[in-house]
Image (cartoon, rainbow, N blue to C red; front, side):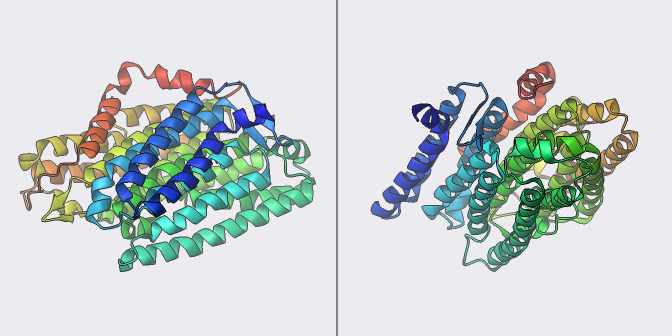
Length: 471
């Protein structure tokens, strides 16, 4: 029993912390600052708990819950991402009057759901974690109740996400019906090419997971929710759920679906190509930065899925590296939005960046690095992310997928370069206020520093990721 508690220590600590700060928030006159600061401390402590936990693979509760290096890596990644997203957006949250004490608590609850999903080795535990995360995200999408766009985006996300969850649950029930088990390891033994019904169930599960990471053709909610939700929420949506969704896809492909490689590979290749193409083309006409970043994220998920679609360990490793660098790039990009403030109002349009290099050279240079990295221009981190993915795809002789990926990379570079052209070569339109958001500035500095210096020791991340997979 004690060993079980040790394995569950991060989840137990997070659960008790959520209950505690919820009561503190209620009995301290709904103090947002106190709860917010405590939430940040909880995230940091949870990181240390995971890092100091044993790394050996252990399964408990009839092998439904697993602790291993794979789940621990992604847990630490989402905790670090959440910590930076939360703290860089604090000024924005206060300025836009969404500083409700429940705000950081709901984010912690969504993280708890993600933890259970990452450690699940059973369909039931996986779905419970998924719903805990989804319910929290529904609330976050529409947390600004006085804003019509925020309420609209919340309803859109709720309706479409509920539909995808229903499809995913239907797939899980079919999978149980055709294999007679909910355990991932036992499903892998039962799932063969002759089990047509189980393959049909696999399609529904992939549809549900594709929606969670906003992959085409299940992306329809992404631009509207990104634009309508407060920027602080958008930055969370753009980073953390994507990490978990991709990790789960890798997990499903590596464990329960490993014996039907050809069947799911075809579907993933189609989704990957469609996401890369839509992300490259649809973003060209966007004028709102948040909508542009929405289509950009769809394209980037397409590149990460290309690695997963290889069905091989090197492909899974390249996808993991890609999503890690993606997190760094997007946290930096959204932190820049928190510095785009004029007369107390946060600006979101690309045209608002016209000529800012003359008045705000530091912000302009930060955007230059981040956008170049998003475009995959060497020697920045984004280039290595794409390089590893395309290398793994070519190693599996999937040349068509690699060629389409390279072509969409060239096309997508246009809209990133167009923003840089607006920043450096257009006439200045407005001058942004001096924003004293130290955490956002530190976040941008760290993001740019990592992207700039990644080429000095790229194997550092490779070595960590290689240890997650058993070759």
